[in-house]
Image (cartoon, rainbow, N blue to C red; front, top):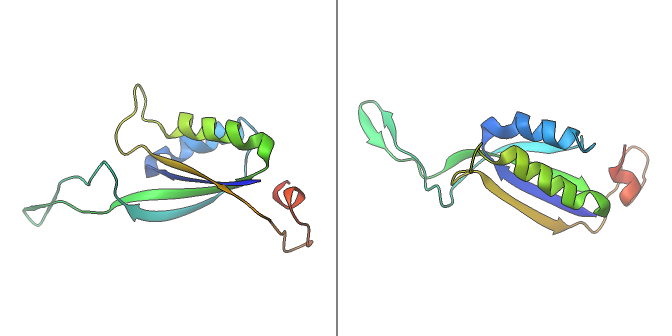
Length: 117
């Protein structure tokens, strides 16, 4: 089992959901986060003054999957997250983290069966 964490542009969430649904991955947690990377912010005008926010609004998508779904999930996230054509700085990152255990609270099921439907 793996926990896949993707940091994406907020406007790409719908495309990611479509890509994930096409490979039968429906379960995810989405959080609003702020961060910076190579994109390094953008210039905004606030009350007539130019400012450069240091932290950019992003979404953090967390998906727990069993080993057979890892590569397909990563590919779907890359496909859904990438800006059309060639991609751009700020499209995001994907982290794959080993998931030691999972427990479904309602039934007490553990491991891969707790991740599934």
